[in-house]
Image (cartoon, rainbow, N blue to C red; front, side, top):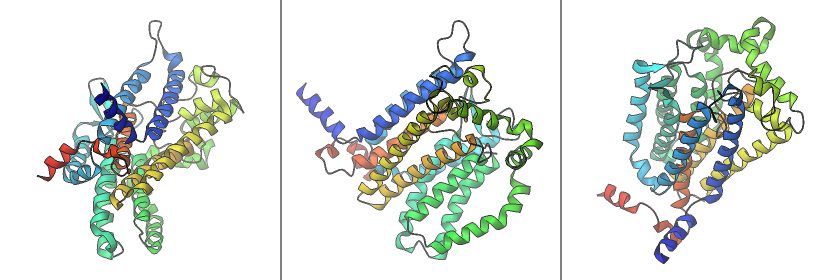
Amino acid sequence: MEKLKNSLGLFFKGTDTFLILSCIVASFFGLLFVHSATLSSLTENQVISRDTFTMIIAVSVGIVMAIMISLIDYEVILKLWPIIAGGALILMLSLFVFGVGPDARSDAKTWLKFGSFYFQPSELVKIGFVITLCVHIELVGDQINKLRNIILLCLHAGLYIGLVVITGDIGSSLVFVFIFVGMMFIADLKTRYFAIGILAVIAAIPLIWTKVFSQIQKERFLALLYPENYPNVIYQQEQCIKAIGSGRIFGKGLFKGSFTQSGVVPERQNDMILSVVGEELGLVGCILLLVLFFVIILRIVKNARLSKDNPGMYLCYGIATMFASQIIINIGMCLELLPVIGITLPFMSAGGSSNLCIYIAIGVVLSVYRHNVELEANTFSVNIIKNNYKK
């Protein structure tokens, strides 16, 4: 019994409990709001909706996976990059054969369907991208500003981004771009290359508009400028803003939002979950949610700075950038500042694959923390995996 107690003590000493508890709190509130968003759709015999149930399972499994991943030295994870890269490639290529898209996007192939369940590979591939890019950046080291290395790194990112774009998932591809830019910035890429990249993107806008965007994606951009010409397209965002505004300072109360409970806001349990928070908890609720997000991201950044080596730092910064970009894009969509591009709000939106993969990413951060802290708890890890791998 004493031995078990000591083992548990070592485990918790080596775990960033503040980070994992912050994430669990965020998921708890996410579950509450998803339940509220789907409350009106429940049948007489239902206690919770399918979306809420799926999210509970995904979060529960995700937490267990995060703890398991945290026990594996991140150096081992990085050494598995060929398998991770190959798996990511297979997942994305499988979409061209088995992929399905949302009802409004029959041309897209963003999900894999397993019976009655859907999985979005790009959510998992984001983490694979962070890992493989981390290895690549570490490989070039101080030579990162050499043109040859920059071209190779851009090709690395371009492969992932290109595959995601071809499947029709423009939103996720934008997150990949932010991850790439963020990690390159941390790796001390010279400012002039960022300026060149921005100019290249600006020059490519006509090509992107004509060759990459589908008709509905073009309409979503145009609807922001000319809402009166695209009433059906802008409807979702307009209702979202009305719902948020109706909550005023303190909101109407949990489960009491008229917009939420009447189902006026489309996809309120997914992309537009902020409308539920704003209506039912008001401005105060939205601010508290942003504070919680800020705390989580700040904690991940702190773990990056605690890392004794560059790979651990790159991993944490890459994941922090992933979370931050998704939060900014989703809130921008909800406030009608950006077009609807199908990005969920981390920890809050319904969705099995997104919630599961969030905790897989958190597991990687926890691994960096565990194997960098100056504690005896470092011995509480899956060292046998590392030793066997080195053999």
